[in-house]
Length: 252
Ligand SMILES: CC(C)(COP(=O)(O)OP(=O)(O)OC[C@H]1O[C@@H](n2cnc3c(N)ncnc32)[C@H](O)[C@@H]1OP(=O)(O)O)[C@@H](O)C(=O)NCCC(=O)NCCS
Image (cartoon, rainbow, N blue to C red; front, side, top):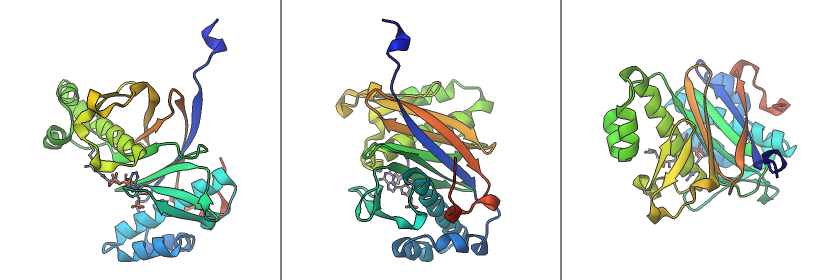
């Protein structure tokens, strides 16, 4: 049988990212109207305006992305947190039938959505144009990852660090277990992105698929999912906040 007769199954993941530099409270005020009482209360608790603005932008973007995938209004969604805080999207009190995860970093928010209920899906974002904090790598990365990083030319080490960091975060966010997972029990190869597990974690590397790219000319995004053999078919959409109207729908 030819390989073409038996293609690797793929899971479609839509990834939306939006820059937040230059946004002020007035610009995000209409988006805040889409959030529910819990989200608005969380937004109100931020001491710094820029943190509140990023939170509102991320949650409005997540609602717009879920709305595009489910064909429901952005304000119709509610969220339930899992054991370690990972939110699941609900519609009318039941699972919305979608997997999603969001991330915010200084200057960018992003969300990944797949129409597969219960799919472990994670996303992480980081600005890429920075020096590698090697003391952080030595604390959080495995010996294999540190050796790879140290083998890179100095000029490429910053990007290498954030490639590893976002992949590791995408994995712990996909499982939903966050830092309750032992960071030394899994590690990444970067190009192409692939995970490996220490025997005690009993993970199957072939169950996992990762994708990574640079967006908005300066931010790294990593997404990961446990598709049990299915790979990621990712579609990436970069949004400008000036044209973002979550109530009008995102389209594709
Ligand atoms: C949530 C967590 C997993 C990631 O946090 P983070 O990188 O600061 O934040 P991100 O912006 O990427 O993601 C935050 C969003 O993820 C979602 N989230 C919350 N808990 C989550 C969990 N357990 N799993 C997946 N997603 C989660 C939420 O939507 C949250 O957004 P909100 O607070 O606006 O609702 C955090 O608990 C954590 O463990 N951070 C570890 C940081 C670290 O030291 N990593 C070492 C990697 S080598």
